[in-house]
Image (cartoon, one colour):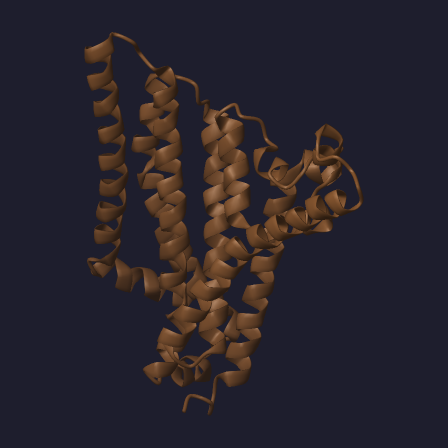
Length: 299
């Protein structure tokens, strides 16, 4: 099987630079510092009170997973948002397109190289996650589900970054657009549901209902809740709360109670599917834009 030449070149170039070792070192250093500080505080508490708080060891898992997720969401767009636009700025995109390479190979190679880098970073953090197994409370299935969340979120953020890189000629503009779109997706869906839920509660008051148990249960954000399927942060919080034994509906319950259904009962699976489909759409857009803006459009 022939390897993608763009992917091969990107991996060769990155392996000869200090970027990947430095990224892995900084990434895992931050995780290790957080983990060691958490364990140190637990040891000090045991020495002072002779009481072992096993819940604090679960907090270690939450802290490490949250930091890793946030760093992935920040790093992946930064890596991919300058891939296509960077080639255009260096006037090398024309040369790549005049060879036997097509736009699919260029986009797939660039995205694959960035994804491989982040995959290596995520796998390298497993020893820090393994600290939780010393005290129990988290199973291998929980870690595997969290790892799947990291992979899907990285694919989503990376595809968004490479899509913006193909739409804009300058890497700076592409990076700003990628982060802006990602922030709008994450914060915007939460804000829309909060606003819709607040309006629903106000309507119950205006209709003369008492905001007791009946009103609280009936008011919800309605169909806006399904916009959270686009939100990687909402999926991450659902998985994290499920792993911590807080139930799988904690995030959704913030916007009112519902009777359930196919999507609500299998929210993580559907959110993975929606985000993967959306990421594929970003990749398709990037391929079409590279083909359209390639030769003769670098100025």
